[in-house]
Every structure is written in structure tokens, then in C-alpha cells.
Image (tube, rainbow, N blue to C red; front, side, top):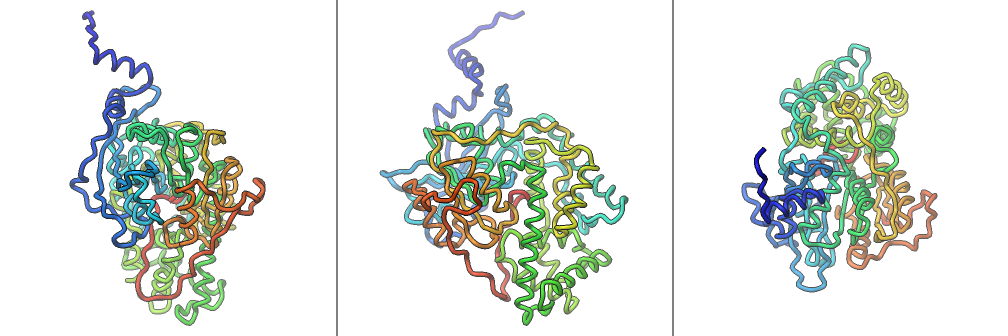
Length: 532
């Protein structure tokens, strides 16, 4: 056995290992992140519309090494970061980390929109920090399980099975995806959890040299923020949750609830078309428009539009209408063109613009499954899925089966499920701002009410309508309340709503309903059904 010689550097490394910190992370906490130009990338565009001229600070990028396994932190992975620094030299509010949801969405793509959209000069007082969570986007390694051109080649099998043979084909696809992920990433999948992503966030905080951070999370990002708050309650300055995940339904139950909410939102869309029957000519009642919808879907099953858009592709496209009604005019126009004039091209064009799954989308989906399948237990007996989905489909046929197949690889996931973090309050936490659309389909309103009940100094700001992702997205009232909270910690309302009540603490008016237009709308495409 060779004699071991331990110098000063090695002693520091051994001490770091004993404390549960990887060597690379120790160096970065001591010396800071190496920020530089974001070379080799297209300009980052945020998911939130950005007023022209609001941000002129350059985007900077860096990579932080974090432990793959916090219990055994010898191997590290890279977390890709970017930032827009505030220009203020005094009254600085520190770092604002942002996350758009998913799991599987890139936080780096949100930074520019948030920095541009923050009202009242707040962008000058915050450093807005984006990060690609482990496995996502520019973080290394980035998960990829299948070739999207092959696996998602259109038209795919109809996601609504009629026979047991139909069901077996879809089960086979789900099993194949899970197996492919396991074969490629058996070493990484055990560590793809929300808890580890929250710990990565705290490594980011430390590397930034901040004693506390603020966090703005949308959709799944609200659950990530809640887990961070539970693990590190003394390290938050502000916490904003927009479009709130139900913390009690992680994750199988929440998907069943979500399918019901998407049905309600789809029916809102059909009623909107009926109100504008003079434009779309699909029927003057919801029942008539629903009949036209079902006829279109059946016809596409027999003859996909231009050989590309079948029933499953149609489901993918029109699910977007559950996230934002801004896209309703575009969707209704294509629907009408197909039904009334037999024109398939508008449907195909919308599919190609919004729903074709490329390598970036497949990466997001791989991370979505890796996190959700590992975070908490899913039924492993397919008979349970069949029973639950058959029952739910009778009430909510629009998305129940498509949503089931989106998540079905979790029934065959190669890694056993873990135990989710038990979200809980702490006196060291700051007051928490919750923002929620009352008819949000992706994260139903009841989830925000349940989250408020867990954080007793939280306030719920509600907005009529079903748009997913409310703040910094065109609602001036919401943005004023957000600014007051980020700037001063001021929460809306007096906290008069009982914690066991569904009533919000305050309300803002919703944005106006869309009107039929010729020009296509722009919609933020979510990374995943559960959270987008």
C-alpha cells in the first residue's frame, strides 16, 4: 500500500468532502462565479413580453459545479446560469432567481423577459438570475432519451384507446421511453429530484455571495420554491409563487385533477367560439361546437391532415388553449377552416409552429419525467391507471387519456420513487405572495388555496380567467402588487380570508377576453402538462 501524502490543498478537499461539499463548489463559493459573455448562443428571449428599451445591461453567463448526489458529493455536474445585473449602486435588493416551471423548462430563457418587465425601476435594484435546472438545456449533462424525429413521428397513434390493442400499443411506447432513459442515464436518474434542484439553488445562492435570495417561480417553479422554503427557510428574502402547484397531490393525483380543469377550460373555449358564431360558423351553442370538434377529431383519425395531423397532434395543438386564451382566435380560425371549408393547411401550420417536438422539447420531457417519476410514488399496476382514467375520461374526455400517456412512463420507470419533501411553514420565512388565475387549467385554483394554508403568512392574489402565468404578462394590477411586494415586502389584502376558505385575500381584474382576429397570436408554450 502506497504511503499517502496529504498537503494543505488535499486537507481542504478532505474537509470539504467531510462536510458534504464538492471541491469544485468550494472553490466557487470562495472565489465567486466566473461570469462572462454568453458566447455561441442566440439572444435569450423571455417568456414574458418585454417592453422595448427597458433592458440595456448585457447578459452574462456562468457555470456552477454542484454535487450529483448531496449525500456523496464527489461527483459534480454543471448548472448553467445567466444574469442581468441591476445598475443601482445603493438600495440594492440582491439576487432574484427565476424559474418558469416544467419540470424541464429553462430558467435562462426567462431572465430577459423578467428583467424587462419588472415595473417601477426594480430591474435596476435586482440582479435577475436564471438557471437551467439539473439535466436541462445548457446544464451538463443534459438528459436526452430518444430521437424525437423517430419517436414522435406524425401522425402518432391516437391517444384515446378504443380497444385493448390500442391500449397495448400506447403502453409499449411508454415502456420504451422509460427503458431508453434507464439505459442512458441509470447513474443520473436517482438524483433527479425537486429536492436536489432546491439544494442546487442554495449552491447558487452561496456562489453569488448572497446570504438571502428572492425567488419568482411559475407553475412547477412554485413547488420548487416551496421545497426550497422548507429546506432553507432562513435564506429567502422574498418568495413569489405564480400559478401554484397543489403541494398535496404530487404527482399522480395532481394530473387527474389537471385533466378535469383542462376539460373546463376547453369548454370555455368552445363557448367562446359559439359566442362568435358569426365569424367561425361552427354553431351558436357549446353543444353544437362540441359536436363539430368531435367530428373533426374522428375525421382526422381516418385521414390525418396532409398526412401529418391526426387526433394526437390535434390534442397537442389545442392543449395550448388551456394555458392561454390569447391563442384562441388562431385555434378557432384553423378549426373553422377545416370543418367548414375542408382546409387542412391552417391546422398543419399551427402544429408545426407550436407542437412539433424537437430535441429541446425532448430534453424538457426527459427531465419532466425524470423528476416527477422520482419525486413521488406512481401506481405500478396498469389496471389502476386504466380504472382511474376510464372514470376521469367520462367527465373530462378532452385531456384525460392524452395526459395519462404523457405521464405513463412513470408506471415503468427504472428508478424507484422517493418520498417528496413535506412542505411546511417556518417562522423564519418571509411573507409569501401567491398569484393565481381562478380558472387556470395547468395548476387549478384549489392548489393555491392549499399552498396558502401551509404558509400562514402568505396572501393569495386571484385573477379571473384561466391564463397560466399571470405576473409580468400584461396585467398592470398584478404587476403593481408584485412590485410592492418585491420592493417593500408589502402583501395585498389584509389577510382577512380564512386559511380554510377558498376566497382569495385580494383580487385584480382579468385581462380582456380575446376577440376574433386574423393575425396569429403568440403563446408561451409550456414544457410539460403538469406545470408548464
